[in-house]
Length: 175
Image (cartoon, rainbow, N blue to C red):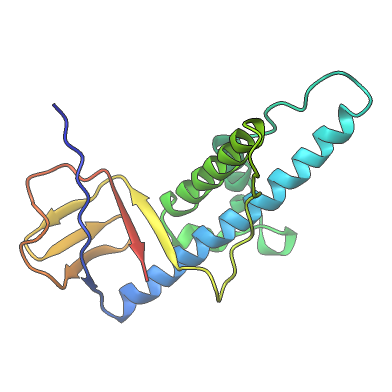
């Protein structure tokens, strides 16, 4: 039997790691907002294309398609509307953010199809939204510290709370 557990621990980052956390949270928020505006634009284009026909709008896009578009945008120079600054963060932060956006759209249309009121996803504010991001991949826990992709080893404020002999699938860092 497989058991899934979650541990909530306080981190004790240094100043460089705090800056890296802020960059990752900003990249995740930016990717979510960019994905939301792209999704809305594609939805309106699809809606206009099927207007007057009996064809349904159907699925417009998904998180993987948005991630491919974002990767293409990363390669462009800043002057051409690219976002090369995203290379300073882990690829997981914006990717997981786009997955969250896909889940929000799926839940919205599921509620609407059930006849319930469905609130569309909203943009995340730089100042009012909770600063958080999720990382997946090579995450290792040791006594009193945890290794996060791109960020490195971060000290834990609580000792011996996270078991060191388990496989860690993902980590959510929030302010």
